[in-house]
Image 1: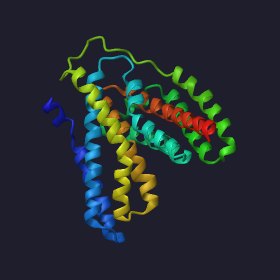
Image 2: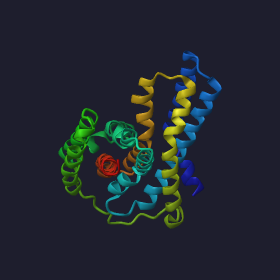
Image 3: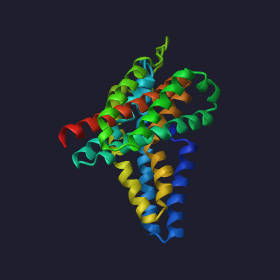
Image 4: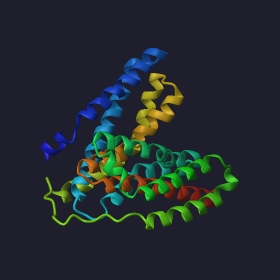
Length: 280
């Protein structure tokens, strides 16, 4: 297990960690922030990313012989969004509650593309269910846009449209074939899988506050933080899942990880809006 954990940390992780430190500390120097606290915040972000990455590797290694691996990981990686949704509903802020699941729908396809480039499987990934992928990503993205471009009076209509459009997409998703030959696990899945899921959910929940701490003390421009940094880091579980699946030559599973994640994000937001409308 120790060797597996060490091997799961790649050169890409080291590069990304260096970029995180450079971004937050460099921003603190340029915009008059607190360099020491920005460095601490960047360190917290790196620890979060490390734990999420390791948890994803353990989850995929544990489940690699089951049918529907991409669908399962698509659900699991949305656990942090579900927790943030609940927190937003508790405080009565529906825009905050829905922003976490909806926001990652824009970044997920970009990260899938980057993962395919990194693993040199862009062509093979693009050839897997291209029409389904394009339709699903387009519809789930347009639903996000319409949510933010309409007021609360349109919420009931949006909830209905969200389920009517996405439930058929989920039902019609491509089916993954189970491996004919069962691969041997590198560790005991029953011992590590529950812990990995708990770690991923917990770290995913705290990722946004940790990034916000680093952003506050680095005085980074809010536009850059919102549209690049936060959207990328909150989609880190999906990105690591795509890398792990593509490195195992499972391009369809990687695509389903992203498409199911986008569909689930819409369901989470729609469910949250429905609760908000009923309880307000």
